[in-house]
Structures are given as C-alpha cells and as structure tokens.
Length: 302
Image (cartoon, rainbow, N blue to C red; front, side, top):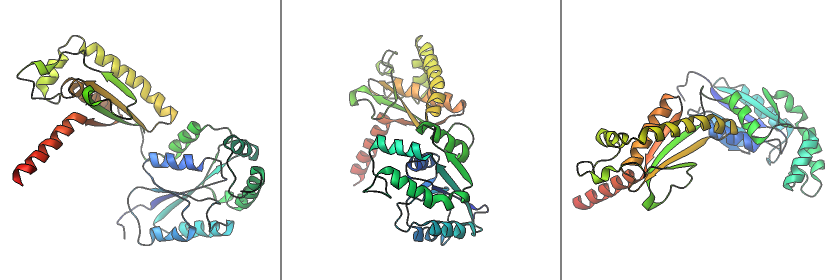
C-alpha cells in the first residue's frame, strides 16, 4: 500500500461528445496529471487495487466505451467515491445541443451514437443518456461559448497543482553550423558579439565559465541586447500562458555553440527563474562534446 497521508486525487472527465473532453484531458496532462481516455469501466478499479502513488490522475469516460451505460457509470462513481484513499471529483463538460450540431457539421465527424444517422440524432440520444450522470458532477463547465483556449484556461484555473505560472520554458544554446534546434519558438543570433574563440586562454572554455561570461559581457552591445531580449520574453510569456501554451522554447545560436550562445542562455535562465518562471536549459553542442568524450574514454578502456 502507498504511504500517502492524503487521499489520491482522481478526476473523472465526462460529458457529451464534442464538448471538449479531449482538450480538457490534454490540459490535465500539461498540468502534470497522468491521463487515460476511454478505459473500460471494469478496468478502472484495478488501477487502484493495491493503492496508488505519484501524480494525480484524470480519466476520460464517455459513451464510446463499450461498457458504457448510465447505470454502469453511476455504479463506478459510487464505488470509487466509497474508497477512503481516493479523492474523486467528477468534471462534467456540458454544451448546448445546437452548438454540438454546429461543431459536428464543421468537422464533418460522425457521432459515435449515430454513425449512420445525422449528428443531431446522436447528440439527442447521448444527452438523454447522460441526463442521470450530470447531477453527479462536482464541477460543471459549459463550453458552449468557450474557445479551446478558454477551456484550457478554465481547467487550469480549477485544477492547477501549484500556484504561479504553469508555462514551462526551455532555453537552448546551439551552433549554426549544425542548424537551428527543431521546435524552437524564439531564436536569437549571438554571432555579432565578440568571440572568445579568438582568445587563446578562453578557446577551450565555454560560456558556463565566469571568464568567458565576463569577456562576452564586456562587449558594449551585450547589455542592451540582453535587456531587450529579457524585456521581450517577460512581455510574451504571460501572453503565451493566456493563449494556452504549456511550453516555450527559446534558442540562442553562435558559430560554434560553445561561448556566446551559452553565456546568454545561462544568464537568461537565471533571470527568468528569478522572475518566477519554470526554466530548464540545454546546451546542445556542449552535450554533444561530453557524449563524444565519454565514448572516446570508453574506447580507451575497452
């Protein structure tokens, strides 16, 4: 059994098809929840047969489930709520029938309860089935007038696991010789800064060394450049957070990816962390050098 002193948090996400369940589950995943969609009802209790620990869980339950019925869902919720080691919450995503019809017509998807009929037939059938489940909800979100971003924001507001910004920021350094990192959202070229490579005593060092950082920082263009990058980043991060982004990648490049880009990336990481943002860093070329060095060392000892 788990040695947890507090009940394990379990959120059951349900509601009519097209109301935003997939979006909600993706948002729970961004918040650090373990998520499972459309697990057969009979398997759900087995997840907790021996107790459970780790991050909280969000389970998607809907009418596509081959074991679904209003009675079966009612019984499952009652069974889980009877567990003293589980803190069960039911999130019901509601939506007006005319909005659901419009959403299905826009996507041209078939309704799971009316694959050979019109979506309106399936929607009416599903809302009737879920009529007895809806009163069981601990939280109800009506998505009729919500955009995807609005729904993400509402789920984050209600179910966030921690206070403060929920946007994860990763800062990269790289060499232009090996190309820009895939997936970078913001890229800054540091090749205009003076290059420590041409200093014999600094060439074999990297931007994590204080001597290199000092040399790069003494370039009169460094402070204005860094201040503008930091100001821009701090301006955009809340906007990306409001837009529903869960991760932002910022990359700094220079010729070799060893000195200037590393120096700027290191300094930005410190500044963003001081401002309260969750930051991780990766120095691509330094990692590559370390990997090659380790492989060579293993070759020598083999």
